Image (cartoon, rainbow, N blue to C red):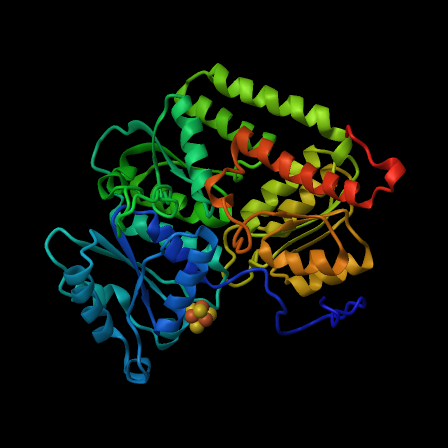
Length: 463
Ligand code: SF4
């Protein structure tokens, strides 16, 4: 497996091999699915749209709907305005969504289609809405696309209509699974705080089987709620790469203060979310959540010897990887390789949202661990690092399974996409409950390996 990957690392100036990211529009499509009765629309040639729908379908194992402007060569030269106008007419006539959320591909970005003007001059039926976000695929990654579409929702829909802000929070959950969105909602509901989550794909890409196909399932943030985000007291953006841009735009447009936190993976990041909510809304943390936290600490204490000192390689999307790095450090593990495919060094194209490398290095330095950290890296390079110094565990999306097999490593699947296992998108990795699940996944992977490698006389019943 991967026999052509050499151990010797040479500086590469161009080209990625086995990238650890995909392009912007898929993130925008996912974000748009988090609006109730919304049909995502891809403004470009139809190949992109099919690919992105297929990829999301494989991860969520649910139907993923989207329409496309279906560019031909003519539109690619003379502009896709007519295509989009025809699409808007057809989509509302045939599929009847409440809202269309248009994103772009590298084709329409390169020819420079002026989407605001096309949309303004299109025939949009009374009571229906069309929003857009520019999502050039040659900038950033799918996470940038998610961020851009979420910001597009604020640009088009958020309104500050009240003089006094309502005692409610906006929650931007970031590029996470519907199971995570449900868990974040459960936590905030348990605290008794009113909130609007956007986008919210729970109930859309994890909808139940009823025997009848429903094009627009019950889930998704309602249009009225999206408008009302401008009246909230505060916006909490979970994960700076996926969520901070929209939160900052909401602050500029409607004077709703933005607070950017880590994705709440692990005990520390979950504590921060709860303490922020407690401070903002002057509420006490209910016993139910205290109990969950205490259970998590209990499990961490019971099992610490499984984790202590184990070397880990983590890759994936920056918000998830950063929070996961913090979590494995709290377990006494050593994350010696941390990599994201999303560009994340300040100044790089499409990366005005944070500094992944600095943030991870700070965590490693605090824990006195020497490691390699890279934003905008690829899995070829990660594999080379591992060939030079082996790790005890690999954590990342499905594409990591090739490295895990080549190097015979225990592997925990986390992030997007996971194409070779099911159920994962229904269950959380965020919050205290999600941390318990991660602990189980990590210790199962390590103990299965210990069982497999043990000689007969060392094969333990109790571990
Ligand atoms: S990189 Fe460009 S052409 Fe390829 S799928 Fe993404 S938007 Fe489409």
